[in-house]
Image 1 (cartoon, rainbow, N blue to C red):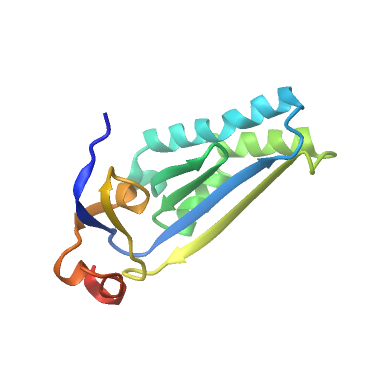
Image 2: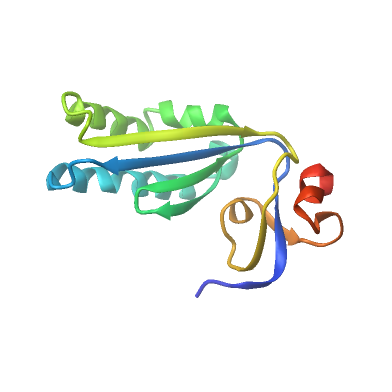
Length: 159
């Protein structure tokens, strides 16, 4: 059972970090064989990342938003890029296989990502009546009181 936090909490993370949104769109879902393969790739990568030491990968955590969309939190873009290019981890061989399978059928599966570099303290997040979620799960949850009471306060240095 997931622990629900009844109090108002704010997310806190030390230093700069990266928010990476990534997703896919199955444009030809009826091509079942390829879609089954594709739908298994991200869960395998997230499982691998979650099992590896945070200090090694810089991967802080993730939040699944839907079947084909998740948000990831990284310590730096350097860490994210190192994982993406590493031949020793799940992403690179899956990327090669994706390009092999869809080289002549780019419209069958749409893929996208957005990368945001977040400066220390230049964010705000609040949770009430929620389990650890999103940035609050990747970082730490702290009471949303005092200098963290309001959104403006959190953005202007409450962290």
